[in-house]
Image 1 (cartoon, rainbow, N blue to C red):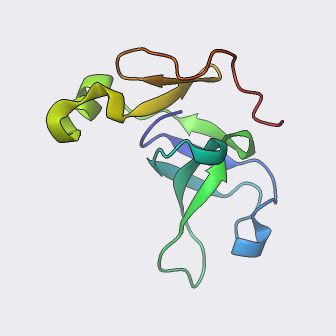
Image 2 (cartoon, rainbow, N blue to C red):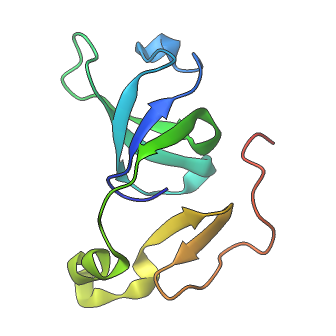
Length: 109
């Protein structure tokens, strides 16, 4: 999962925010705090700022973005590859390929 991947929400854990199972969105920021990405959810009624943190275990990628690591690196302040991370096979990895965790995450734990 990475910036601008399209996702679908897998459950009703966010129903209190109007986000139902099957809701679609796009990852717009990558804080990786609490195993979450910031996602813009499409089609929410009466919501002019539909950006919510969604847990990795609660979403599935439906379409990968065509952004490359180099595209992301080119847009980072001072081109610092340590300032951006993505999730690959349970590992948080920066643009240098350094893993930030030694054991892959169990996102449901």
